[in-house]
Image (tube, rainbow, N blue to C red; front, side, top):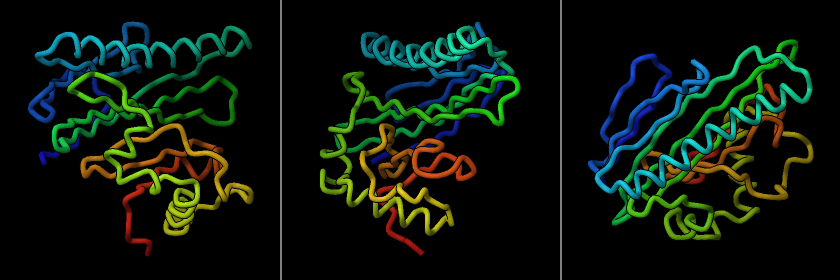
Length: 215
């Protein structure tokens, strides 16, 4: 198994990095806003390349359009809007996973604080298909690992370890979080957004479902 982990920092210089020997990643800045950054892939199979890049651009467009529509509808002034991203890439048997974790942030003038959201796109590089939660059964260790009971336990252990206060009614969980990704060690991470299970001050909570050390 080959493993590469790259955190792509917001930079003004376009950079190209190699991933798993199968794809290169190009850092791009949106022509519509100087703080909107996103990756595009370059690979031999142009059909797969087009499919992946289409999904990436659609995600960025969705975020930007939502913020500008919200500002226009409510008469808000946008003080800041930006994206950054992290990209783990793993090869597990014949499956090469490309996870792109976007951090999307916006701030309306006069607001108490910025609104920040983490959204993960997970791609199977052999097909270009987005990988939804059904893939967790095959690659992440089996469906029982992702039961509400077990995820609730992992969330509680994580928050106890990090001294994070959970809302009184956060546990047991009523539903699983929508966003997840695989890290460089093929650990599955579940993402809990601001206010989803804890106050804003707790930040975005990232639970490693393969974490075994609970001290």
